Image (cartoon, rainbow, N blue to C red; front, side):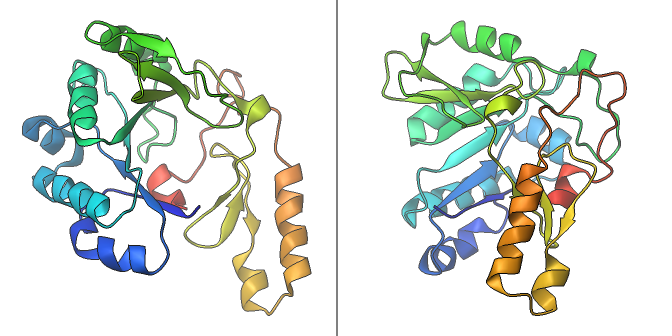
Length: 237
């Protein structure tokens, strides 16, 4: 299926048109449902716009609507269960993501990161969680049934529980570069080939070459690891 990841600030206005154009679903970045925490994290007082965008996406059939949340120590790390309860009430699928070294300030620190173990412990203080029965396969999220199901919550533990060996993901950035790993420092230029009139077979060959160049792991725990130059906001895709 075809999906996009968005902050949902303009989604209320665009959801219907996106669905009509063939979009299947949306992933929305939302770390909190508290007004003060939202402003602290985003430096914007626009939580109401995100909520309206989520409602519009659901109404337009862009489901299941998925929410990606990152817990930040000292800011919203006490809000995991609250956010899950809010999502369950509205039928949204929530996935918590360990903070990754993809920030623009290059200030990421493993010591400050809220780990998957901490996230699950916080959720289990309010909900009963069990590993989901469906096979995970190559999906990045480890799923848990909530209070016996059918609702689930996901945890993407890229740092403490890496799943590189099963990963089959390749990302096309907003400016036409192929990244075979979010943490890659190299990219393969697809835009130039497309604009120069490359035929489909050549495009496919470039894509395959990038895919086969995937490394066995992201290397975050290696002393030689270097954070990618591009932050997540500049990668897109």
